Length: 297
Image 1: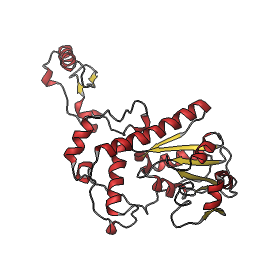
Image 2: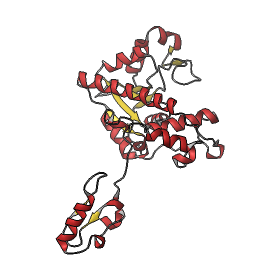
Image 3: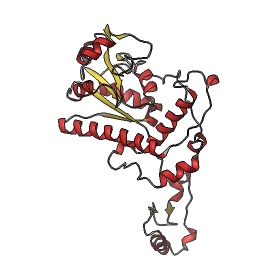
Image 4: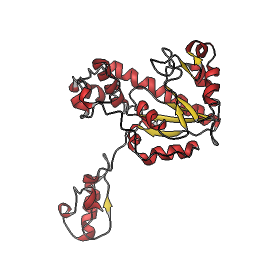
């Protein structure tokens, strides 16, 4: 139990980086994350029989008894990971409890889907030794992917609505944030513990670091299917938006006037560029463009 919260929950899904997040949380003094505490097939981890003295049968009979044990853990702020298909009784308990800190971890649904399909193919769900990496490719299935997105999105909307209606605020993390020591330490500060990380846990290795199209056995089918889909309806669940850097090469600057144009698709680009060129009495082709980050600065 901490000063700010009594315990915490990490809302995540398979292949979103939750194992890596948990390993770093457990490396922070004052925190203890107990795995997938409410997975219907096991308690905490596949090879465990109990958490803090609470057996799987006892948990199934009364999920509150396990939440209470984690909340009352004396030496650390306890918590667990929770996926959309875990025990819904536990979900209602934690969502109604402002003393439970909510951490929401998301990843671009396409990346998580492809990672999940590869893990199914190879049977490798974690990697600690790169020499033992198993190669495999995902077979993209449009209907399956659509269901994957809709399922995760519905859960995210449910979380968002329940937190809004109860006046609670979650700590949002994207998959990309997990590589930042500063973000991890910011999370520790938000949770109200004194411990901090000096470096990220290096035991878990990226399993599929290659470009997305190289990880799919049928990339043409994937491209066709994605072209016919809404952009994952990201306007409804903005935390699904993939992290992107600025598209600096598309920027155009005036020659002398301190003005820069950041074009948007579908906007009046030619008209704006002609107007900018007139400001300095030059041709549109003479204005600086295709810059990199260093040139922009």
